[in-house]
Length: 190
Length: 190
DNA sequence: ACATGCCGACCGTCTGGACGGTATCATGAC
DNA sequence: GTCATGATACCGTCCAGACGGTCGGCATGT
Image 1 (cartoon, helix red, strand yellow):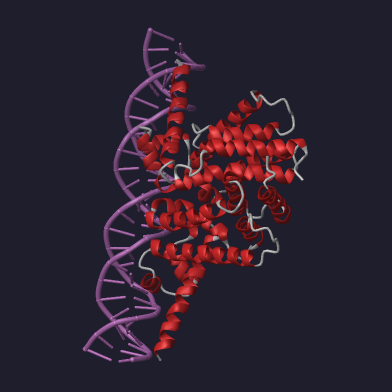
Image 2 (cartoon, each protein chain N blue to C red):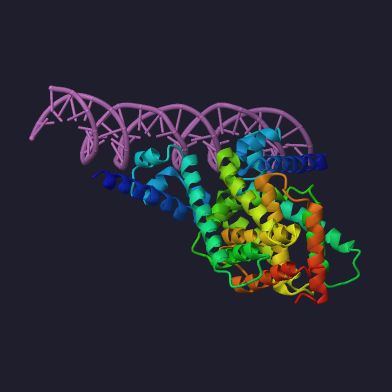
């Protein structure tokens, strides 16, 4: 059965990505090919068969994470209860940032130093960031204000990566961010 | 001359820290003992004479950076033109974050993964962060709002570390952040 | 004589990746 | 139907380089 083999291979790929992710939560330093292979119950050769280099593996991890997050924001966007079209993307972005802890975006934060050295990875992230920047800044709220709100959301992940549990209740932060967005979306921000 | 020798040693220490800092701007991966020693025109043995381990060196760098930044915020605090005492620390923090590019705080952002593995370093940063969190959240502005503003400021450094030049004009960001602070400091934030 | 500042060769370990296998399965010739 | 061929998935050893840190030594100043 040709499908069996391909399906098994895809499954192995998934296991490798998941293994890399779970290792990343403990810090980039532990992300070695051996560790990932071991955690995924695959040999090193097997790992390098699917991802010919560490860079390739990390790129897959990054795309996986970005995909998850984007899908998550999209879902929040689709189910937004607020009838005001202005600030809709911002609301979705904030909700995704402060409520969806299933997605280990902290892992992305810890990858920064590695990404900095590998242009292809940098491009992947930069492109995604550019898309969001543009979308959020044309959301009916002043672009600068939108940028500030996005930065606060993103910082939340970073601090999560550094300090582990956040020192602030995510709920309160989300509520206040939504208030800020509402202000901006009503044009009464000055 | 006893002072000559001690002074020379202190100078060497300073050169080592500066070297580490300038290397850090190119990414953590390049921060190796050999590289730092070479850049500071000191032998590896000499480096390890002053900082007995890599961790010790990085701790010195971190304290150096935190000291610079804190002094910088303090200066902004002292020279704040706004008579309103509420939000004074927040204004100072924001001004320091968006205008003082002399301090390579991006370097601190890139250190995150290393810090994550070394509790002493983590403590140094965490303590400093805790001091600022408390100070900013008791500044006459709603604590949650203050946290959001601080997070936006901090994210600015991080993005600087990732993307190099910021994609936003720092001036505009600062202006808008100050507006937000003024809102909060007047109690008309809801 | 002794401490301090500094030197630079050396060592052990870790890590990314190369490489030469093996096993399974699909395909096409006969 | 079967056998050669080749592709795909995976294995596990080995190596070269990099890196943190040790150590014995030297020079200078007290």
